[in-house]
Image (cartoon, rainbow, N blue to C red; front, top):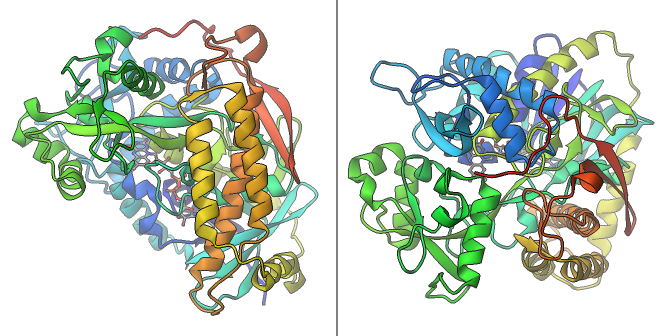
Length: 576
Ligand SMILES: Cc1cc2nc3c(=O)[nH]c(=O)nc-3n(C[C@H](O)[C@H](O)[C@H](O)COP(=O)(O)OP(=O)(O)OC[C@H]3O[C@@H](n4cnc5c(N)ncnc54)[C@H](O)[C@@H]3O)c2cc1C
């Protein structure tokens, strides 16, 4: 039986829940999520949400917008960044009013801390802008929004994985879902469909991202012919726990933590004399890699790679236990290290996709050439683009609630007058055949080794530093892995709770996105933000101040471009 809604929100992270909250004012809204909502990756966000409240010192949304544009190495669409920074203030107070338990200052106002790349007076020095709830900010956002959605009668379908999108030309009309419990496929029809499926970090071997961050939304849309924007820009966060990639929030440095090399030197003095450890992430990650290349890293016990120290021991036990309690727990559990006493061993970890599904400022899928009707995206899966070539810390949570809300509002209006859309059981046929082919395969390959190889290739060849031959080799290897994928065989033939089938489909999504990422990266012959090439070390505004739009068709990725909105600030070289 086809189920009918006005709006379907795919994903129950911060972006999806905020969109659902707004859409549900007028629309019969369903949220579909492969995880229970509170397990969405938003719940892992530690550091905070940036908003120029000025509670600790003078601040302004204009400075926030400027920092966002500069941090993104001028590939940011500037009007979108202006909306982000201005609306962030309202959004944080809105969350406060809905019950989010922010950490407080002595005077009762929302506490704020420093974060990388956030400055006062257009780059004069770091500013306290990140609002936080200890190091559990994302967790609190999820809890708050989920409660509000339940209150608004949003219908939740948990542990349903969307596997196909129904489109009529450029008009959305629903989705096909796989129900984990039964293994059955369902057709949900709706006038509006929003993808808020989160990140793609599982493309890489060392990552801060949850197992579920497999880029399902962008991959499903890419296969439906939607070009993906700026996929070459993938952020490596400088401070992952050695060997595991688990994130140590930038909030540690915001509270005064310092990066040191093997000789105990504060090496960021060389790379970013003003912002030091609070320079943007792309710069700090490169600084760590450069120290390591100079032989100044600390040799790791397990010889995976060299690393550096993140030292918070001088902050005192009280600060560590009150401001970063979860981090202290992670370090004790995974490393046997107490950060109040001993420095933490860290190395860069794959963290955030700046690129994704192209949208306008109302969340509508917009390729630059055409706008889709009833098709929306928000959150990390989308590219507005407010992060450009490199996202500043705390700006993803802002993005979720500012642009998740705007998309939800647009949906609430759109569905009022949108024509009814057709859908029938037959719409599941394409997904059913795909599943059947998967189940019938006899190739004998297991999903694990193909996944591992893809993650190694992307980490080694499309990582912090890049060059032509390596990226071309990565694209070739990924193409080969896509062929091997055709022989990946299901070992578990049970119908109910068959997580293996879902994992295989997730691998297919990651392989598709890896190919788009590697080809987009190989194509851009300059260095900008997180895309840093040894063979083209300089930013090249004359030729490359433009967004990449990459279309996947079978084994080929064709590249087109979209202009960048530079209507407010003229691009300048980045110094910190
Ligand atoms: C460890 C960590 C710490 C971070 N800290 C911060 C921070 O302090 N500040 C900050 O600004 N940013 C931070 N970030 C980044 C930020 O948390 C994420 O970018 C953001 O939370 C993503 O939110 P989202 O709503 O887009 O997606 P998510 O929260 O990842 O949610 C995705 C949702 O989509 C669903 N889904 C996915 N695929 C499917 C499918 N096929 N079918 C059905 N449902 C599907 C999932 O079930 C889930 O509900 C951090 C990220 C990590 C990994």
